[in-house]
Image (cartoon, rainbow, N blue to C red):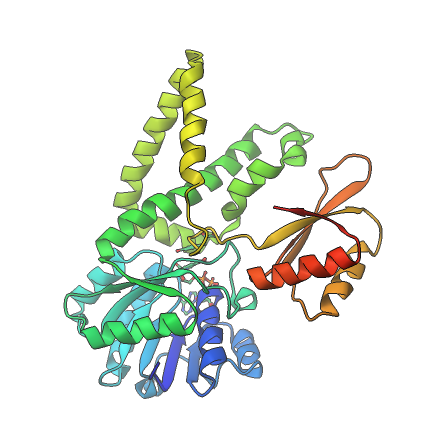
Length: 365
Ligand SMILES: NC(=O)C1=CN([C@@H]2O[C@H](COP(=O)(O)OP(=O)(O)OC[C@H]3O[C@@H](n4cnc5c(N)ncnc54)[C@H](O)[C@@H]3O)[C@@H](O)[C@H]2O)C=CC1
Ligand SMILES: O=C(O)C(=O)Cc1ccc(O)cc1
């Protein structure tokens, strides 16, 4: 990676994670950042991630070899024109937006095809903000690179090197193809998750029994319903044609299921679950898709005060960082299970060994 100075417009979950990944691998890279929250930028500077806090779009950008647009997709497209006068000759403008056609069309309109290369790291989470960013978030995730008609091999290679530097797997794709694929595997699932959550909300009784009893399956497939409304409104609006097409297909498939269910067609319903199970079981865990692989396991333990802190201390003593920890309250009779997740497989395996030594009852997920 040869970039000496890189600017980030927007330093949230994704911008922050890329900046942290670059600083980890190439600490001498000068990172500049602009976002509206000054307090967060100060924090990023205190942590050694940001070297220069930008007050806005201006002269300092002329020192940068690469400029990352990391705000919601429609704002990214709006920034193109604003940053254009401050681009150093040879510098690449790139983005991390979840949709690509909209920004590529803006690039064409503005005559910026020779300096833009699109990007989309295909991993993330329902959380937002710099505070949730980590240098490992995009590790082993596909990093889609969408060149323009004028992008040179050298420009594409420079973005490939950045993707590799942060541990991602670069993959060059046509931007239109990207948007059709993303509509099916990422954008539709977000609509499904949110509409399902809203259906339950609207169907629940006054005692909120559905909410109280909602468990495993519902929670698994609706995690992404907690995602940012501003991010997802803009993603849906900028990919509305592909999304409408795939949503219509999905609605047709649901209508078919409804028909077969009402006709009590056992074999159709059996086949529905059989086909999905067989296909789902072939999905690769090697590269992270939008669904991040789960390096977690469950601990069966009594629901006692202090139980979590004891366990955390045991892991901390070995320098093992926990990514997330959550109690499963669905058990009856006071017994609880604790789901602990880790940043990678290695740490998960170390934690498993360590807890085994202390005779914890462990269940792999
Ligand atoms: N959330 C995810 O898992 C993924 C998101 N993306 C894409 O990454 C981009 C950023 O998303 P996140 O990092 O998740 O969001 P985020 O909400 O964590 O960060 C957005 C950042 O943009 C800043 N921002 C918002 N409006 C702004 C404006 N008008 N001017 C300057 N800064 C502004 C915010 O202050 C924040 O720093 C989006 O384009 C999204 O489509 C791509 C892959 C995964
Ligand atoms: O949280 C998840 O599983 C996601 O789906 C994250 C995500 C959100 C947006 C993207 O463009 C890519 C990945």
